[in-house]
Image (cartoon, rainbow, N blue to C red; front, side):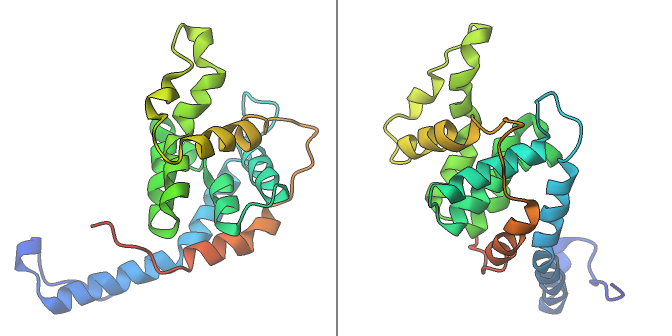
Length: 185
């Protein structure tokens, strides 16, 4: 990019400066799907699980698709752990932030909270409350998140499960990130 804004502090910017910034941001958003696909590929490495993190995501998305989920939900199932690449300390929140402008409130909430809900399967091994998710029991998407974890996420560490390949999901990723993003300024 050869054009640069004229300001060194935002308070001194002009409309033309911000036009340039927004043009750059638009180009960056157009490349989002390609970046996400590269992040998924980064998950195809060494893992303490019996499958790679990528394979776990592929299994989760494959289970969602085979259960008849809509395309948006399938992509959310595929990307629910994408935060492991960029923010392992808060992977659920990172994945949810990435998806939020492009998905329904329901899918956003499920991805945002799936880490807590997965605690049901392991927290008791560490003298923690495996039912910590129940603090959200009155939320309208509570059961949907329980089902997401029970049906798709937690059983998807199986080296013998025949998941669909990443190439199968690429058109769904591209379609999702081609949507006009909702603004959350």
